[in-house]
Image (cartoon, rainbow, N blue to C red; front, side, top):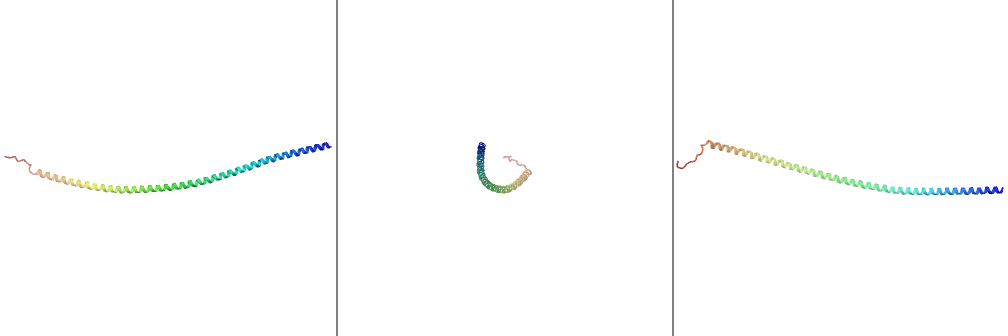
Length: 146
């Protein structure tokens, strides 16, 4: 019986050692999982920080881009205003030039009419003078001693 007790005790001791080993293995496995989890949490935290910084940079870039777009829009509006002002001025100057050209054209037409009237009068005088000459006796040269 002592032998059976000794064997039972030996097996009991072996079982306890086996359970302690299993517990130690489970503890090592849990410790590894915890380390992995902590490492993953640290990576997640670092990634969140990186993404937060990236988001803030993108927001700043977007704000700068919007400011730049607003500035460019303002410049475009200023250039359009300048273009319209210049166009209006050119149209006004063209209108004045057209009016001056029209007045010059009217003056030239008036002068032309005056010249036409003067030419017509001269032709009438010439015709009158020629008729007067034809009505008179023709001119004959006087010969000496005749």
